[in-house]
Amino acid sequence: MDSNKAGDLWDGASPAVKKAVQRNAFVTQSAATRKSLGAAANRTWIAVRRMQVASGGNAPAGLYTSVELQTTFASNKVGNELISFRLDEDGTWRFAGYTVH
Image 1 (tube, rainbow, N blue to C red):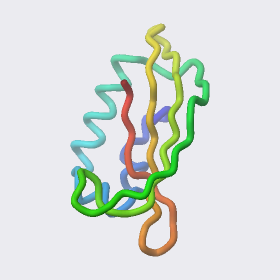
Image 2: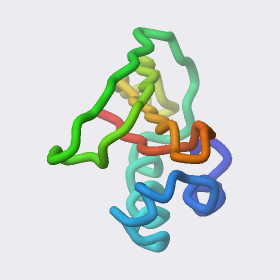
Image 3: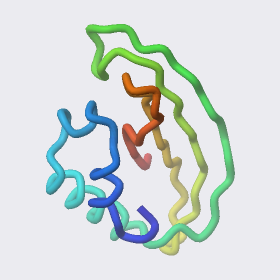
Image 4: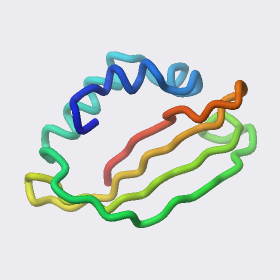
């Protein structure tokens, strides 16, 4: 996200992400979000969480890890970034989500 390479991030993402959102939509939405905030100027770790998600929820079933960061952006806005990873069926952790709130 920091290098404006959301497309590359999507390309290496979990198949679960690719089923949920098309590449162009992910790139466009990510660029719009980050453009309004500016570059990340400072980050502080808040939490790392591990979650087992059951089937039937909003996300595909599986094991997830999320990293939450408090981030100060170039715009002087402060937000919490949440970056998620999913342990895919082949045993590889892959990108599964990014939000700023």
